[in-house]
Image (cartoon, rainbow, N blue to C red):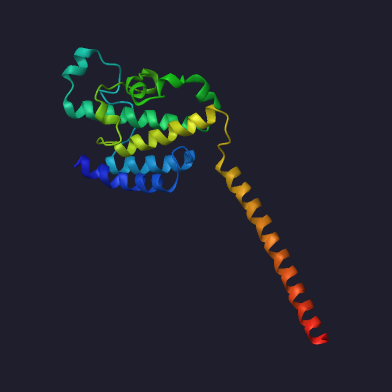
Length: 197
């Protein structure tokens, strides 16, 4: 059942990924994709009163039912990705969280922050593009790439890119109108000179 849900949600992610390179999605678009993922998988990462949603010893984790371990991992993965998306818009948040916590899938997997409800997991298939939550991994990948662009100081604002493209289009339209005017005058003058001869 989870595989079927993942494939449905992944269709949305794959369509988005085909249209633009990784890292060019703004946080709003990534939140929208996260919302779709959460709806498909029935994830509510804001709940903090679950018995598994606390720091557990190895023994407690071992005794936890497999279904609850899976839920713990999924909710933690969603929280981590949501936090990365939030970091795209929040400089203070970016300053408080080390890039080493999320730079690679392995680092993301090991990241533990009990205050934020972020728990580690050990199964690499969970955070792989071909795993059960591959669509969530692709959102993580886009958010991390966006943060990388921000870290490197590159222009990230999609609105700025759109505004730049609008200016180019306006300049091209003005050039086209000017050329059409010149063509009109040239053909008008050519008609007069033919009649004069």
